[in-house]
Image 1: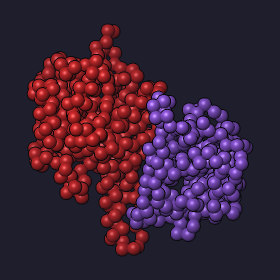
Image 2: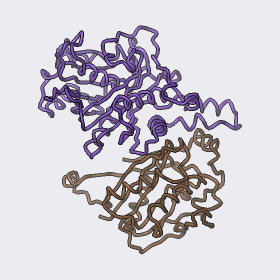
Image 3: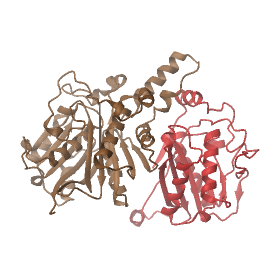
Image 4: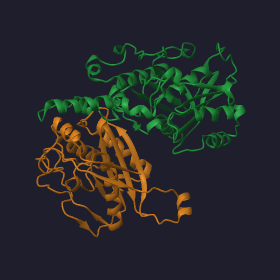
Length: 323
Length: 216
């Protein structure tokens, strides 16, 4: 199946930039989300009560549809690690401040994880399949798997993405995730999956697999690649994340150091930053004469090992079409 | 697969703020219903395909024959007056199950006991089943709304209904709502043939899910 559009809001100038993969640089402390003007996407009334995670997800979702000319996707599938925790905190604060008195329901109704997919459906007036996957650091991969199932079951156009925002109140709980040299960040990344690709070339989403409680990343990758009849030599670039250096050494052993790129240097840390990596990989593959890679890229593997015991593998492939 | 949810102050305050929390006992589908009760619970089911069963040799107790998720796209928390999301969920679940609406013997409704949900769901059921509405009940009079666990709990009630060929009653019902006149099953119905049971579960974001369980 084909990736027909990607859209990503991050701490990089990535939104609505056709070739954003040449505009990226390593994050420097302190960095901030580069948020677009949301007024183009969301009515003022709605915008005021929405937290950042909702706004950036909606903007990416609408941007993807605009690129493809698609009015209504046949499914809206969202992965999020922490969802609308900011609104959860706001509502809890309001309960505390009200001291038994009345509280406004606004933060409560937008506190559920599925608010993101729900608000996208409301803005689009879309009544199709609408699902949220929250699987810690593998939330986006589970959303992708669901999207692939939708296509395999007959849908032709599916909108899938992920969003997570930096939540100050959770910072102290993030010690497990956070290497001292990476910043806790925010981001939203969406893409459209379709049964139909481009006319000249197309980016295929070949395979997604998740491994929970893994203790053998090397074997997982080997099984994943061989299930597609591939070996490590067939992969041109590995976009990876890891919170311990161990994974990096494993990947060097498998692929060699020159094929590796740690995408957390450009995304910062959040539970669904692998969605950015998939958009980034797709963007790299779609570009001709990339300043770093030329036309050498054919297959990109996204290796999400943000949490050591969780592994997500996503394989992208460029196909030239004879037209 | 399953779900679990505890009672929390967060949810009591939230549903109270929305004016859909009834501090007294809930009355699903009754004309005087005032809101939902919160409950807590957990439910899990084991799903296996044919290949898995050929290895485990487990005896299936029920078949999940239809399923669908659709969205109301009307409001973040309120259901539409036309019950679009619920209607689409039921309609497509029946398509997946490959059966017509006349085959459904029992509906375990979402039936929270709020003014908005029970009316919207009733209208969706009328749209789906016309004059021949199957026996239906909300079991939330027994459990309260267990939120994330409710779908799993009510799936289990449907499986049990098929296993025991009986329908759990809808508690606390006295007066049909004037808009629809629909009367749920108010006593335990036993000894009836029950081949297909349908379970509705709805959530914030206009999310509507329908599951259909069928006799093995």
